[in-house]
Every structure is written in structure tokens, then in C-alpha cells.
Length: 79
Image (cartoon, rainbow, N blue to C red; front, side, top):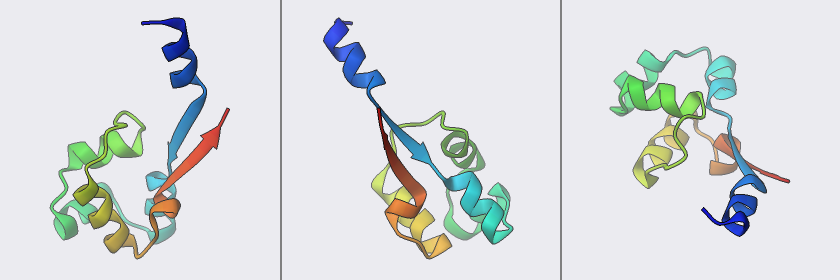
């Protein structure tokens, strides 16, 4: 990987606020799974920032579930 690409990758971060939303709404991954059909594994990976490739339909389901905007779920943190 080139040093330019490494700098680009390191220079930004997308923070996922799913854990905070879950806490605020008093729900567990299983609750989200039952309501949305998103697997618990996917929910866990998103919550723990292990997944940076989000399907649009997954984000849509999460926003509908929490009645929130995409900016409430994902946050851009510049370097």
C-alpha cells in the first residue's frame, strides 16, 4: 500500500454511534434483530466498529428503528 493511501486512510474516521443509541433507547442487539431482520452478528460488528462497509438498507433499517437521521448513527471525525 502506498504511503499516500495510508495517509488517506488514517486521516479520517467514521464513528458509529450505535452503542450510544442502543443505550439511550434501552434496547439490545436481539431487540433490533427481531424488529429489523438485521442479524445479531452484523449489529455487533457495526456497534463495535468492526464493519466499515455498510449496506444502505441496513442503515435505513437502523434509522427507521431508532427514528433518527444518518448523522445520529454515523459521525465523521476529521483528523
